[in-house]
Image (tube, rainbow, N blue to C red):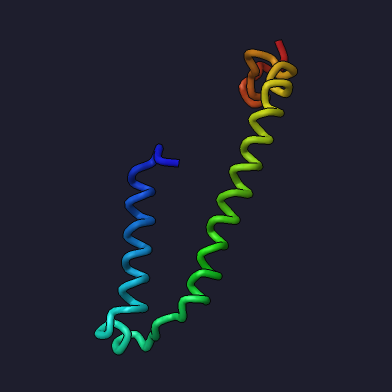
Amino acid sequence: MFSNPLLLAGIAFELAFTAALVYAPPLQHLFGTAALPLDVVLLIATFPVLVWGTDELRRARRRRQLPSAARSVPAVSVPPWSRRKGG
């Protein structure tokens, strides 16, 4: 989760910028936004957690399945376009 600091910085900037657009009075006036009620913010905040959790479950399931699938794949594979044709 913390392996990509640049991505985390981008997410932090996005959240801060969005909060400024929604809650800072000068930006509210400029962009025509209004503060969201707390119940709406809490409802919206659940969705990123659900998406992240679902993706982590998918990745965990894929990691469990990968070792058995990796055994059936040859150690060295040559792309079809690089094979010699003819003699």
